Amino acid sequence: MSHPRAPQESKDRTILLSYPAYGWFWCTRVASGVAFQMQAVAVGWQIYDLTHSPFQLGMVGLVQFAPIVLFTLIAGHVADRYDRRTVYGIAWGVQ
Image 1: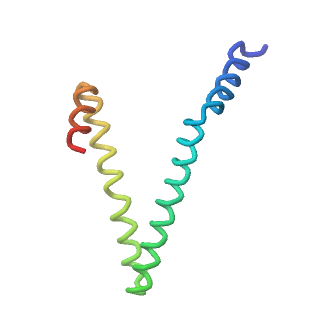
Image 2: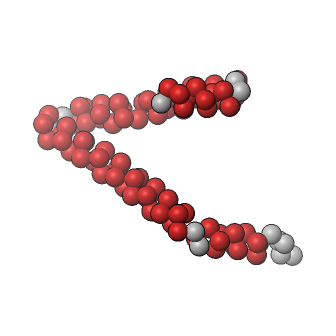
Image 3: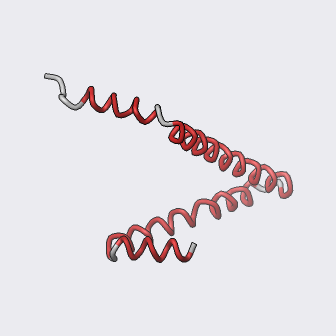
């Protein structure tokens, strides 16, 4: 038995690709991701080249990764506990 929504979902994906703005958005997201990865490699390479210390290289990785984990846990708690519109407004204002 086939799923009745399958053809519609396929059509929705095709419609998204027909918008030039969506294509540009997708391309910039991919380029941004590649740029962040290149920056992380360059920083790690620079630190290792200056210090020749695997420990220092590991600390750079930890410093890049730890805030993401910390703020994700805090943001999840705040989003679940408080009104999301208020949280969004405060976050946007602080930014």
